[in-house]
Structures are given as C-alpha cells and as structure tokens.
Length: 334
Image 1 (tube, rainbow, N blue to C red):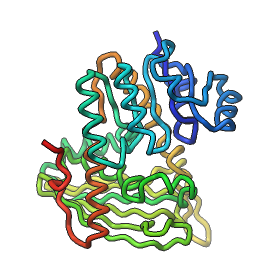
Image 2: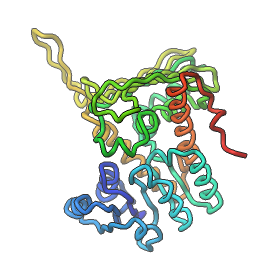
Image 3: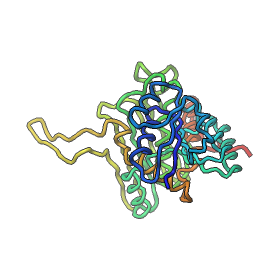
C-alpha cells in the first residue's frame, strides 16, 4: 500500500517532490498539492494530473493524506509543521524549520508531546557520493583533523526568494553545516565567519560570499566556502583530512568523456544546479521518509534541523559582531 502524500508548496522544491511522489519513488503516491499561486497549481495539474488547492489548511488532516511534505516559503514552515503535529500527521519539512530557535524548540517539544514523526529536509545526506565519503571516513580515517566544504551556486536566487530566505548562512550554508555534522559525526561548538556583498542584486545588509570556520567537539576544524555565483557552475566539493588519510568528494561530471585538442583537455561542466546534481538524493530522501513513516529511522531529525539553524545563527552573529561565537549561546532554554 502506497504512502499517500500531501505537499505544501508548488514551487521549485515542492514541484520536484510532487514529481518524485507521482512517478519516481515506489510505495509513494501523490494525492494533493497546496499553493496560493494559481499558475503554480495549474502547472502541476497539467504535468502530473494531481489534485490541488490554494489553501494548505485544506491538506492538513485530509483523510486522503497519510503524510505531508512542507516545501513552502521559510516563514510558513513552523506554522505548517505545528498544524501537522496537532493533526498527528508525519511530516518531512524542508530546511530551515524556522529562523528563530525559540520557535524551533517549541516546535520540537510539541512534536515530541504529540508523538509525531518529523524529518528535516537535508537531502544531501542521501547523495550516494556524500554517503560513500562519510562511510569511508568512518572506516578509514580515524581521528578527523580538518574538513573543507566548498559550495557555490551558478547564480544568485530570485530577489523575491532571497527576501524571504533568511540570508546566505540560513538559506545556503545551512546545508554545509549539516554536511560537516553528517560526515564527522561531531557537533559544532564554535563559529567564526567573514562575508562580503559582491553582487549588485544582493539585498542590502546581506552577504553573497562567505568563509566560515568551525570548531567541532572532537577537536577538528572545518572550513566552509560559499558564494552565490560561480562561473564554473554548481560547485560542490568536500574534503576530509584525518589520521588515516584524506578523503575527497569532487564535483560530479555528467559524463566521463574528455576531449583533447590544441587548447587543452576539455571535460563536461558540472550539473547546472542542485535539482540535477542531487536528483538521486531527492528520490532517496522521499524513500527514506516513506520508510520512516512505517517504522524506520527518521533521519535527519528535527534536532538535526535545529542544530544547523543554531550554527547558521551563530555564523550571522559572528559576521555582525566580528568575533567567534560559541553554540552554547544558542542552547535550548531550560
């Protein structure tokens, strides 16, 4: 019997989840998608033949729906997860759960009290290349000493998206904070960050280019490099250095074919953006959510989502105040 999904949001990510639920993940079916934008709803009706509604409230608690995917704008996530928890409906929520840790902590408490399943949408954990890197790091490297994550987008996001996304560290670097936690198995204890705005379309007061330095509980040091624009294209690399050696995850090439001529050796560019680069990861993430609903592990958890936001907010504070910021400053209230 298929897991019947309702999806809140019909934008780029919501549409991707909808297509995967409809056609690409066994044991999952697409029941309904909610979005206030009529054009977005019409597109999914044409492409997938799914039921749609302008009101997300109509989907939460709908008897046709076994579980929810929250893929709406960031400022709606907490409200929608809260409603799902109250309805007893399992939910996979795209990052970030919210940009306010007090709201997230209340949300996690509510989910725990209701006994509801919550997964956070860090799809990169399901990328086969990153998962292989993590496994080999755990088996072969011993003590980890250094981590370097490079993550650069081909172009800045649309202005209307950027205005609601929470800034570079909350919107973009948050994936890389989770990557560091995932591949090392350690918590982030301290964040230093430096950032600049180099592009005219960047909202006032925000960075589009940043370098972040992390201290981890196991003593390792991690560096994250982000930029909203890269002439190379979508640049996704990870390096882990430890006692037993160094592990690398390079950019994934769409083909192994290379052509040599008088100008040198030419290879295909990286996939154009995250939808193509992490296509398999998104499918595997939805399959993992299906399995979690039927008793499997719910990973990444709500706590994973919280800790990535805490690191992002620590980074924002480090940028603003020009000092290292400890994650202790963002510990849950007792």
